[in-house]
Image (cartoon, rainbow, N blue to C red; front, top):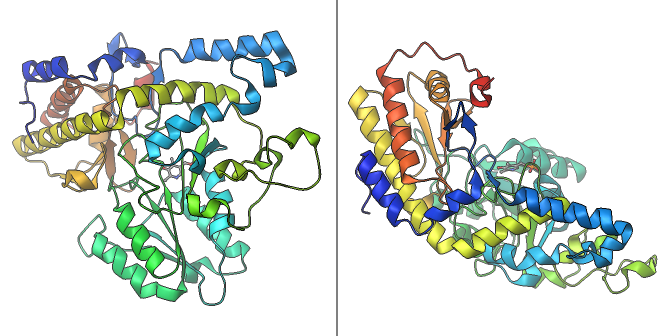
Length: 439
Ligand SMILES: *Cc1c(COP(=O)(O)O)cnc(C)c1O
């Protein structure tokens, strides 16, 4: 892969040729003392699109103008508001329209989907997940196992990395599925692992899971808007994601859910609510639940329109930019960041170990770095240089140059900051996050 040379001039040339370069102008980049920070934490909270305010304003106007009548008379009636998001969401995750719905939030959606897809019976009781999943997922999975009167210590199984390795080999994941065989009820994996940044082979995992007679679900918190996905073709049973990370839809914004077509008309149990009821007869307020024959049938509550308005804006940006083009740029930005980290580490004799897979097909834009002997100190120093990366216990610095608004110059400037941190004294850091808020 051709990458920029590590000079300001070269980085700027690459930005000049970047077909997605204009998107950066559509976002508010946080500043400290008039300097734009290097924002590599879009994997945690995506930046605000400049149009978010005006978008919200329009919804508030309609609420002010129509009151309850806005359900049917707002510019985008609230009754069917979530339908605005369906096409964009389906495009991002590679699904058919009827397979996706935007609703609730991530962990809530995981719970609702587990109700349908984790149904232990006989000896088929186990859930297999990746090594150290995001804690919320562990809590959710363990709570469902307990809810069925079973013991998570026995039945929640993690695939372990090999001795001395940080990420998982696909062959080991598949072997573990095979080994659990008819004791396996469910495989629930991240799409992209939040800690290591590993992009799992979703299709292979789903195929093997089905071969042993279990369901395969994915938490796409770090995958949606980061890597190209084809959930329908990959035969994934279900998935859920959030929209405030790569999808830039604001803190705590609406979540997404996918249910494969083949399950839509099945008799899977589910927890019901009025928004999942057939919309034609919903307001007849009858006592019998008659679910919609699409993923919408899993909705329980009426839609958070204000969050959704911003999500619609963001989806429009993603669809216009195109996941293919975003991915192309992402491979370059992350490849460049990887090269810079290696170069600077070598120059200063510091072992900056990137634990994210080196194979671009097995990662998204995030790189997870263990700074041996420096760790948290380096993170603190980077903060003082106005670089926004994050620290994840026990010992990783995560950085995510996102293709939507990060530039090649950002990566260059990051390299300069890293040089400065490693070149100077490393005892200055005090971990004070107020640096980032200019206080
Ligand atoms: C960010 C993240 C969450 C957060 O869950 P919320 O319900 O949105 O608070 C859960 N799981 C994973 C894998 C995540 O990365």
